[in-house]
Image (cartoon, rainbow, N blue to C red):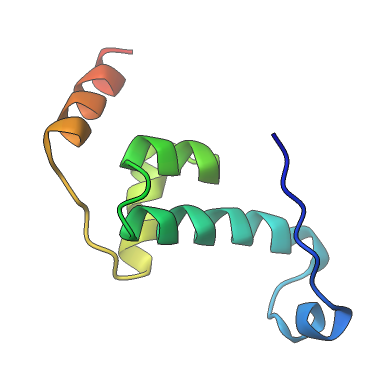
Length: 83
């Protein structure tokens, strides 16, 4: 599935990101925010951001978002470690 966001040129120009960085940055920001809201697990957020688990944890830490670590996350980490 694909989602398109329409933002005006003035708003995009005010972002401190180049045209090639904007989409990537928005993917990571959305994944972090959805994780912080409890809408996604760390694994789901990592997939949305197209990051591995470690890099997703770093992205969360950079934004001051604490890890929500429960049974679901522990099972995901075990499954990830077995791969």
